[in-house]
Image: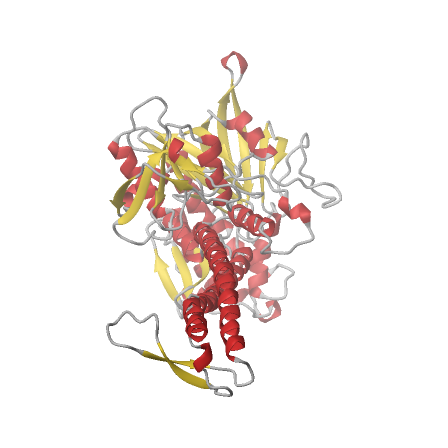
Length: 584
């Protein structure tokens, strides 16, 4: 979230209005830098996402549900202990800096109320999320020792100290002329740098906009300005500061071309009019647009594995075509035996030294005699020519058996890799991609000497609740498919899978109840959604009791056979899928 403190101010106001009074139901930590707080308000559940990612720090109310690790990190467990069931008392910005305080009232022993503070510092590579009580650090998502910073340590038990630069001026609290006077006195080389050094919460975008509105280049040297320029710069500061003080923010996202978000601001950046400016009614909407437009950070591992899978599948496709052609030829072995038999029946009529000869076809099924021309080796005798055809026949038969086995093996490998490709296409988190990569390493498709890369904690399968209250478990890769089917499911649970289409194993937990047609339909839609036919209509989905699903000895991960099945045809409904995948 490329935002400075000035534009952060209206966002904090909106978050305060939306979340204050809400109860924190759950705390999750999707990755090393981020938190997701489930906040329950009357009539609605909100997901408050906070991230100290050095490349993309942010905070917003989100509808996206990030993947969570199977084992919660220590900081997450700590926050659950301290914050779950607490109420958000207020969300405030410190001065105009990129520091947000989430004050949370929690009930302690004997019913006493304590206020704990979750501090979010949105400062690029120095971003952090810190839990405090009485201004003492309980812990942080990133610890900062004296080896990292001699001036400011962020460690449990230490007093919390705000980052440097808190003595700068707040343009929302100070007269604009006084502010500009301080700017002109700043020991900086250019106007934009002087504005940043003087005002707290003013980033490069705001500094350039103030210079532009004042009629100056952002890079103009300070010694080229004098007191005569105070008026123009003061008007520029007033034009933005008064707008925000009056609650008239103009949330704007700047996009270069069609797909490159550049910046987000609480005002219209006039100096960037050459780009596409998207205007919003709230900063929350602007931040949500910017976050979704920007998309997830690239996942190079996914690209690498995708390319590897595509190459392996292409290789198998070529191999399958070659084997099929060779098998087609081998299946003509009967013609070789037929030629040998005809030669044996005509040993004494074969012309010595001939390279071909016509014979009556003793295998002809027509009433009229049919001739067949058989190629001969002039250097061989009649019986040797016959024996040569028998030798070729026996070799072709052995080849047919071998080729049939190879073709089946090739098809099995193709189906297996296709199932991995489907799982990879649905993976949108690094942990999911790593798990798929581990499977490929185990299967021998990826060579690695670094066995430590295989030690990541396994992800838990996806679990959702149908609209009528049944638990549905979904395997999102082959390891999880085997897990949900053969470890987590009970014999009378319902097992679902798209018919002859790669996809997830889906289980409906019976829990001693009769599973409803509605639950089967919704689970079938989930099975279709997590399959190769996600975008298709009338997808066939088989379902049967788990007791009728078996794994053949030596079968690859995720492969099963089953019987006693019924088939339903479903089309994944986006609204229903979204509702089912949204935690209750």
